[in-house]
Image (cartoon, rainbow, N blue to C red; front, side):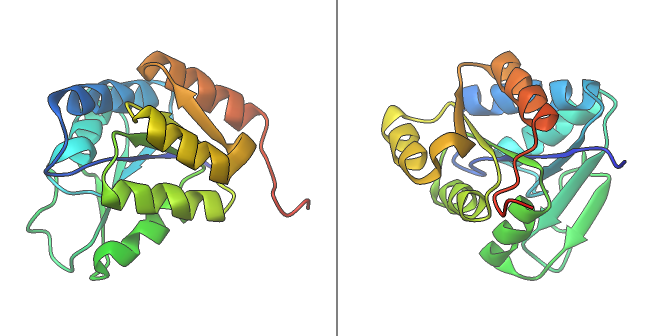
Length: 170
């Protein structure tokens, strides 16, 4: 069986220091758990911080880039996937992840959370406003979880992976 792929999504240029620090810790903990980290692959914000954390933890990182070149590639990405798709690559991010963690919120992250909910993927919200939590929980029901911190997010990932959910019933 292949290693689980955990997607960490969040703001790029608009990420706060708190979100970047949380993403770094989350990436490190994901790597230490033996999971593969998937991000948007760019060299800024949550995606860069999570990737650097995963490398610190000895993990494997995959970056799904919006462009068709490596210009904005994070140095912490092992496997870059160049899409040339812009924001449409968000669907690849969520469909390729077994669990999606949103660390912070912005328009791109909101689209990824919505796509994950539509695809029946489990979503964990970390450092997301209570208004956003209520909104996404109303859409995703039992598939949207809120984590108080990075350790709680990792505990939720373990729980989700040990009890897979199949929305199609097969």
